[in-house]
Length: 342
Image (cartoon, rainbow, N blue to C red; front, side, top):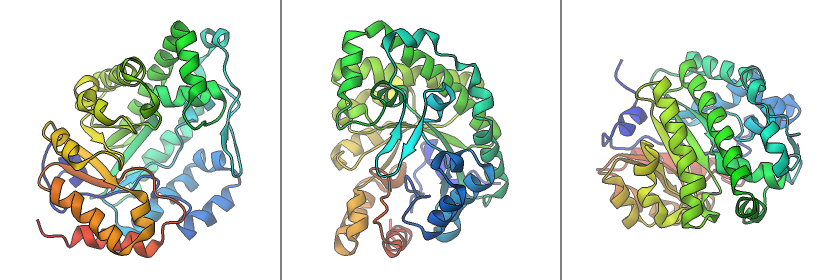
């Protein structure tokens, strides 16, 4: 069988029209997702139920025929495996028991394999049920982003609690990030061994770090993960998405070793073209253009294709699709990409 289109791009090949998938493509904008989530009960119940997690992962593939499916789960399953009291509050998002510096040394990663076994079962099911041509993407949260939620106990506008924690407790922060990198790498290895074609590391809060902290907390832990994953799965394909990293992305690929750099919508196409010279880029349509539709959507798609379509590109949004996105606009997006002329 010929290699799947998205994998070919991760290997540096230019493919036109480019493969396309959308972050959070299994989500609340789809009525079938809302119905399945209702059936599951809580959000975590959905994540840990292989039958239902498989179903919601497949829903956008059936409806739109995306080139890739991304495992349905959450970046906070690792702290959940560490027994940090994870729960989701309607309208507020995730809540955890905030971790103190003196608690970090006692964290026990031994529950990880058993606790995350249902997610690995979902990966195996998906590889069996997906169409042959569809790439299966596994994922995890990056250590820094996961740590920000563990420290504050919830999301904050600029993750100041985690940044202060790092400045005041650098040794404990390093210990926490090392533990999360080790656990997350093991988790990605298991996903790849279960059938994922590639994996993505989501560093949703990389953009709040200054230059020195970015190197210490966003680059080094991810570089360690990439090294460990490839030692276990030679040639493993990895996408790194450091949202908001701006000009710091210019060395992110080189220093971490990821195969593709995910771009948020604020990254200029001029910078994206420079990044593309070293390999694949992924992105980076503003999710609000998808809500707006019409000319705003068409102009955004065309600009990305015109500037990045001649190199290795995975078309995606610059962040996750939102519940307000009309299904008709997703269909228009895909039609615009698939009927584009090189």
